[in-house]
Image 1 (cartoon, one colour):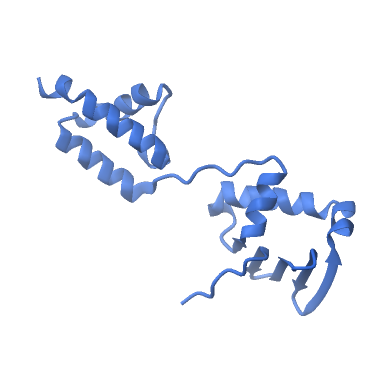
Image 2 (cartoon, one colour; image 1 turned 30 degrees about the horizontal axis):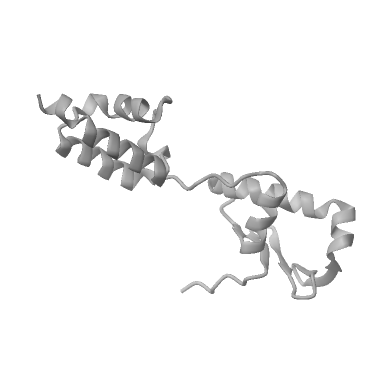
Length: 155
């Protein structure tokens, strides 16, 4: 069982080289634990040093490409920090398992297997090369489009 994420967590990194954790406190200071060293610094000092922007970039990169940061856990404050500094967090994709299910659903609907990507591309008006890369919202649009187009496949 994993421990719940603290509401003030910015990010936590545990890898073979050491441990680092940064958390926002209620008095708007930040406590940093680096190995066995703990220090608390005020936000204006971190802003002046450029640390907040560096953390925001790291959090945004980790949220956009979690596979590249397997040992980095981003907390709620880290997510807000990434958004505030202009790097939007991409919507989560459906992944391989749900993509496989979507392929089966298309087949049950009568859509030929060789046309699944073309159907999605038409529905979204963009090139689709992987169903796993679709977001939940895009899946709803594609599924609605496929149901409307069903008559073309049944005939």
